[in-house]
Image (cartoon, rainbow over all chains, first blue to last red; front, side):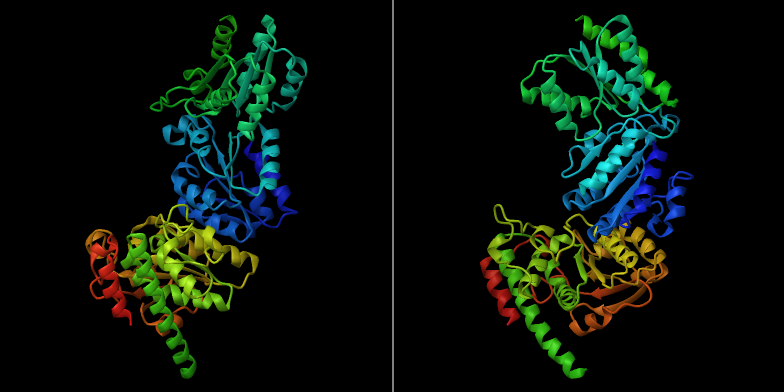
Length: 301
Length: 261
């Protein structure tokens, strides 16, 4: 995903001279494509996320289009007030690209787990949020970011994620009419969701799988309006509280619908131990088997 | 040059009297605090904006709690429509800290300390990248030198050779509870800036000609330490921590305005 982002950004920069890529001293080997091509528009600020964020707001003020690249907590929580005041309230075209969604940096421990960002970022004014699941959605998100001219936040995984776009299209072609169950997911956890859906489909259920990666509230509104009484399982590598699934409950409530909704995500962050991404997903009930079992309970209830 | 200077000085002194009066009337009417912080920064704001009115520079007031001074200065310079009954009144965009919504002369809303300087450095860096010939002047409080972003940005600005950036420190030596030196000692402040690779000069922050001559760029980012008096111009407000919080009563306003005649 990070390579998709950097390649696409480099490509856009060939025709858009306003794009600037800023990093807080991260991205070894990942940002080279851009920095080689545009050394004058690549700024490694050093390890100072707060000042970097405000400075990028200043650059946006005179019409540049900064992308602020860093890992997980560093360009989000470390500089949250700078994002809130200088970027969002000022409504400036600063684009925050955070890699390491969920447990991407599982073995690095608690400081590097990104599990609360959707909740916190979705509370900020003017900020457009993107939660792509693979390289294709990362490129689509970037296209939207460059069109919106607003403050944007994109959370992406790390590297090597499977591209899900073809599988999602074929699933939707087969099951968009009268599904027994809909999976709504955000982010790279989609690979487990698709695998879980295949198990359920093999058993005989009609299971529709939808990724919600931009304009979340409107997307969810459209989906619930189209499927007003279908059972729904939301899946995200994020805290359940304040996550995409919580937004589904809010929208359901405001539309006065009666869908049965099960939210899967991280109910409590056990951050005291290390593990690979797949180990930590399993620990928090986001492995394929858990998703299948929980979904069957909902289907059978 | 001397004739020119004395003309500017007369104009500036008169303007600063008007600004001080409007600040005091506004604080009285709105019953708001930070009047002493406003009075220390009058000449600095006037000088920074006076230059701006002749050339399109950017002026940022990072000590956003002196919003009353920012609005009063822009009103006296004819840049905005501001009056004492607008400040902090119900539904007004002239709230108690600087709001960019009210004027395109205000590049950044402030209120949380330590935001103006990095934002200004970004503006200056962007102008340099884009070949825009324009200065960025940011006025920070001395208490703001407690913030980490001040020193992060001091490094960023000298690393990127931002000679188009001017930082003015309103060195009134008082902060929220007591003196700067008893809170978190700043001295030797000039040495600190110089050691970060900045040109640094000290001026009398109430002497308009000294300020004007200091607001010239060099080949480095430049810091102007403006020695000021908190509550300047009003004898009973000067150097008193309590006037960080109090607003002048009708009687105090009457006495204060008499001192400005």
